[in-house]
Length: 106
Length: 113
Image (cartoon, rainbow over all chains, first blue to last red; front, side):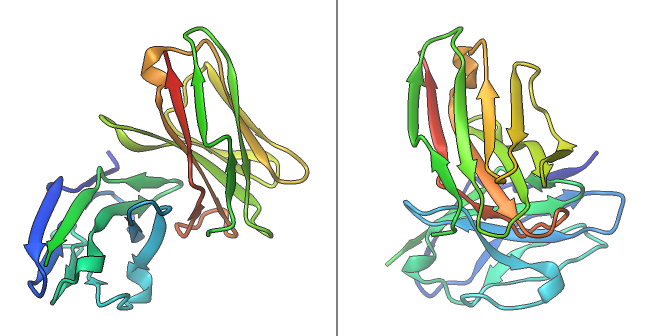
């Protein structure tokens, strides 16, 4: 079955602390994975995609096919990173995880 | 602003009724997607249209239907509404019909009383 799992509903850290939002997927094919973010009172928007291997707003995510994971990481969290983060798997449609709310305290 | 427009923003209706949600994609995007987001189910893909044709279907109920018009705007019709249909309904659009980079609208919040 095609599935995306984000085990943490809420992740709370202090400003400057490292952040890792977990994402695991289940897919028999070659995965195409994304992280989407929704800031307060804003629309859901793409943060980054694994094929780009880019760093956006200090966030990176590496696809680990052996562990079927695509965790989102940032070495030093900022208050403005507080948002809902969704991991998504693209098959013939986007399959979203249930999301993780990141709270960064000052 | 993603360029995707959804109307109305809020909709309150009663059980058994029928409603229509509207979406205008970004200029140039041929694909439109509909999603339902409820508290217990997360963001669920409903259906995709590409250039007027249905391209992919998710867990869309038979009471729900959608279409994409020649001007590329799309409508999602929800009929025989039940309390459990209360949710946020999002529309998204993309250039690439198989692309994971989608631009989302602000959503329509449907409340069925």
